[in-house]
Length: 250
Ligand code: ZN
Image 1 (tube, protein in one colour):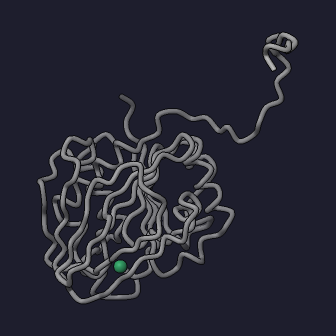
Image 2 (image 1 turned 90 degrees about the horizontal axis):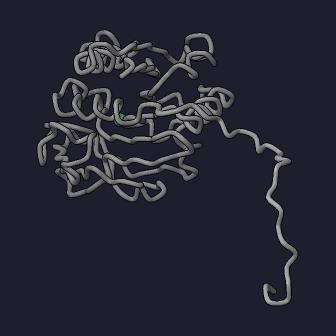
């Protein structure tokens, strides 16, 4: 198998603006994600890109040669240009995988791919989160126990305004009583889309071994399997002769 080509896109603002976040993620959230991918898939080719780089760190060539993109964003979704959001969406339709993490539920490319508001209920109350594994035989669940807990997380609650997932792999329960569809997959065009809930920036969630396993597995599962744009409808001239309808046919 060819080495997995991963692009990690991160907004990279909280880490620069808040000491508490910088202490948890000294190399940025993208740095922690990069590390977890390389920990599992040591021959992966990992590129990182951040919001305020030129073209958000993206290029047409990078999108064409990315097998799967991880996306974390929160407070500056609006700063992502519509043009690049459309290009990321088109890349997925052509075969690239997208793993949207935590507050990327409102990221422009994810919303475009879903076609819904992707809104949800939320609360920051340092709550315990318990994630339940609903599909232990699914490749993304390899090595993930039947349930695991995060000592403190932000709560995301239903209703999560997403289209019905093709697969629902994990459900979260929170100390305050709320539940949430935490790990969902969809096929869009030729690409696979994954949403995984945990990852609020003020908690060390991306250092949790089970969370790291899920993300690494999701990156592999969602990888590009082919590249095919289907962007235009070709006019075809070949046809098979159709017999004239007879009365019986009508
Ligand atoms: Zn958050």
